[in-house]
Length: 214
Image (spheres, rainbow, N blue to C red):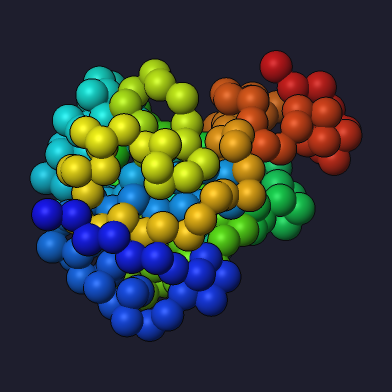
């Protein structure tokens, strides 16, 4: 049975964080707000939880999940290397709605990676998200709280019942600040490549890097 918790996104209380992190450690799915849209989270190192997430989303296992990290130090534990482009993008846009795709470290499950050699990670501009991940000690998945291919949700009420009922914890932080998911940029190529347009505009990234992106 799902447990609904009303929570302050910028000042999450310790009891709610404890309950949420315990659910993640037990392999459960959580629903949580970010600065963009509501997401579905599981412990990225729990393969059974990741499999359950694919099933709930009705998503092909060849499509990787993105991850949320607490800080740049945590990111270093899950990637192979960080290029100069990567350091510059993190300096400018983190915390924030920019997901950066790196060469994955060997400790990142192939299931999370969708069988690829890459992993997308971001540090969100949301204290609740960062607090959950910091307390857990490792990243959680960052995928929109909907069925695969359907519209993203900015409130708990918009999330399909089939998705809500699959989550052990529903963190209701009210309406999210944005309605557009994060921008996804790969730094595994030179120059970087934008894989998904989103909350950080292409023009802003191009002007910052002083290059044209494909």
